[in-house]
Every structure is written in structure tokens, then in C-alpha cells.
Length: 152
Image (tube, rainbow, N blue to C red):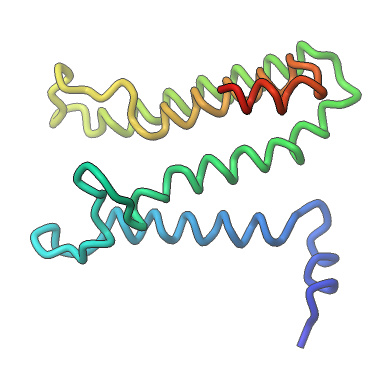
């Protein structure tokens, strides 16, 4: 039996608790999106009607949390590079995730009524929120960041 230190050392550059939480979040996402028959869904696998909170309501915040925590690890790779490299890669990631979300909302095109196309679907919101957070983290001096985040 391996202990935690051995597991963490086998995959350098990975943070095991974050990977586990991300995996659990994706598994929960799959569970709430495919509950079986949509006629008889277990109540915690539905969104709360107006007030309250179910497990389903936590999937999106959990996913955004993992994306935000991952920023600390991924942005370290840009520490010694020019700022324009970071900005280009960030803008590219935002556009790709946003375009992928639009594509998935419009697929298959022959069955889609484009007058009802969801411009701001889940992936598009993830792209915009991650992009805004990325630009804020890089643009705002570190000593001001906690105060600004608390004010928002």
C-alpha cells in the first residue's frame, strides 16, 4: 500500500487534493446532468426552485472554485515570461472555451432553432468569469487584491 507522499511524488507538478476535488466535481456534474428518466428525478439532483440549495446547485460554484485555485499553479509558469504572452494565452483560452460552449449549444445545426440559441451558457459563463478573474489577479497589485475581492 502506498502512502500519500509516494502518490504525490509519482506525478510531479500536480496537487492531489485539487485533482481529487476536481474529479469529484466532474463526477457530480455527470450525475446531475444524466439522472436517468427526467420524469422521476431524485429531488437533490434537481435545482432548487427558488429558495434553498441542493447538491445540483453546488456543481457550478465547485467547478469555478477549482478553476480559481488552479490559477495559482498555472500562472506560476508565466512569472519569467513577457506579459503579452500571458495576455495572448488567456485571451485564446477565453475565446476557445466560449466558442466551444456556443458550438455545443448549437449542435447539431440542423436541429437548432438559432433564435433560441443560448449565448451565455455554462461554458461561456465559465470562460468569462475565469477570464475576468485572470486579468484581475494579474493586473491588481497583490496587496490590494484581498480588499478588492472582499468589496466585490
